[in-house]
Figure 1 (cartoon, helix red, strand yellow):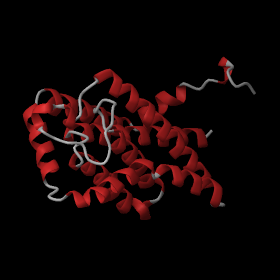
Figure 2 (cartoon, one colour):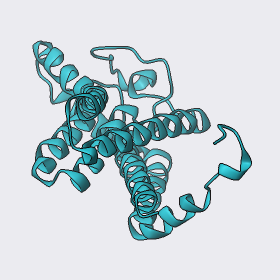
Figure 3 (cartoon, helix red, strand yellow):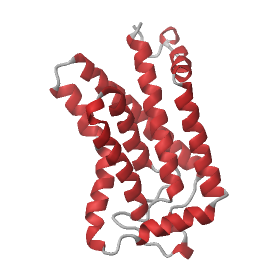
Length: 216
């Protein structure tokens, strides 16, 4: 057993995992690209209009802590979930779920940071002409894709596959997370849509990889 030995590398499973879920993977890639091109680059007016509509839908700042709390919960809920499934559960399938979620989240966060740096697109409050003031926090990294939304949908994808009874609550949390980020003035709708597809992509890829590994 070697930590860095080339003989232990298993890149074929990556390709097999992508092929096994090629329909979902392809939809995610197309959806991500369309969010970038049709809204963020070519459809700037529509993206801006929707961003302002969501932002102005909040009539009172007294709701900001609640909305920010929802966004934060969607962003970090994977941390206690990983801990709960691995430390407190006795079923080995739940230990596997913990590993799947942890790997999916690391993949999602790494891809999000790479794509943010690659596209380097501004957030709504960084566009002076919109007159948007950030609520809750002032992020300094680029906007596309939304990291909070990516994280929330990565979790929702794993839950959807392995815990059917919890599908609706986690899907609603993921949707609420994305909407909250627009209302807070921290993201354009295109950022959130891109995050939706990126999160589903990461979750689907790692779930497929786990299925292949468990069959060996």
